[in-house]
Figure: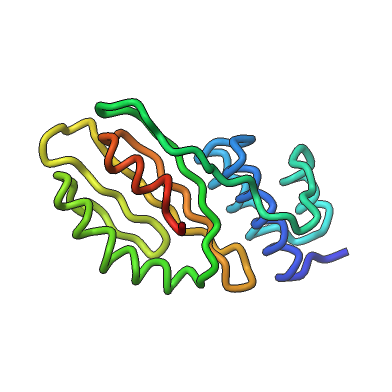
Length: 160
C-alpha cells in the first residue's frame, strides 16, 4: 500500500517526539526523517519508526525543573508552546536575540527552524534552539548548549 503525505508527516512527528524524549539523537533523527520523507509505501514508513513507541497523540515530555547550580553548564530544555512555529520564531528573534546578546551570545547561524547562538567570550559555548511543528498551532522548542545560570534559568521558564 502506498504511503500518503499525512502518514509521512505523522511518522515524522513520532520521530521528533522520540528525539525530544532522548530516545534517538539528532543525527539519527535527521537520517530517519529523510527516509520518511522519501518513503513510498507504508512498509517503508513502518521500518523507519519500528523501534519508536507510538504516543497516541500525547505530546512529548517537556522539562520542568529550574537549574540552581551556578557557572557555565550544559543544559537541555524541551518546551511545548501553544503557538505556530512562525510565531515562535518571530518572538525568538525579537525577544530572545537581544536577551542573549546581553549575556554575551550572538546569533551565529539562523535557519528556518534552527537558531544557533555563540558566545563572544568562549568559543566552546553555543546554544542551539530548534523549533519543531507539533501540529494544532503548537511548537516544540528544543534548546541545548553550554550557558551560565541566568541563561539556563530563562530557557527553563520559557513559556511560563
